Image 1 (cartoon, rainbow, N blue to C red):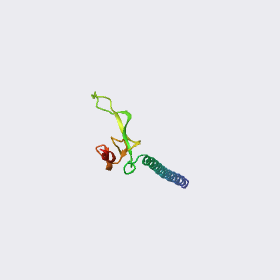
Image 2 (image 1 turned 135 degrees about the vertical axis):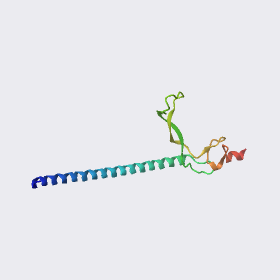
Image 3 (image 1 turned 180 degrees about the horizontal axis):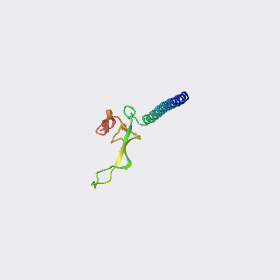
Image 4 (image 1 turned 120 degrees about the horizontal axis):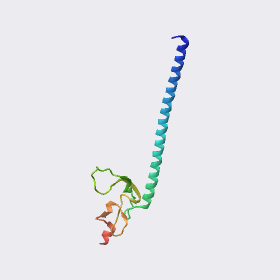
Length: 136
């Protein structure tokens, strides 16, 4: 191959190598940016959860010992998508359900059947709190 053709080949190969390097750098930067964004979103969700938990704890406490609720209750919600059964299934339609947090009630406190106050597991037995049991 003549000298001028070889220089063209070298120049082209150098440009291709630089383009590949730039593409690789771009992919690495994009991956790092996405990871940083994911961490930022995760931190935001954690902060929001902590704020909501603080509100829940301020609102719901055991009326005997004052222990705050440590988690929200959970409830089942429909996704709106039908559950797929085999083609000969003739039962009622079923919808997929997911478990979601219900921030309107505590997950680890129980309402007393008599006084209807929130009570922790240590101070309730068979649905009756310690204070109501002392009055029986």
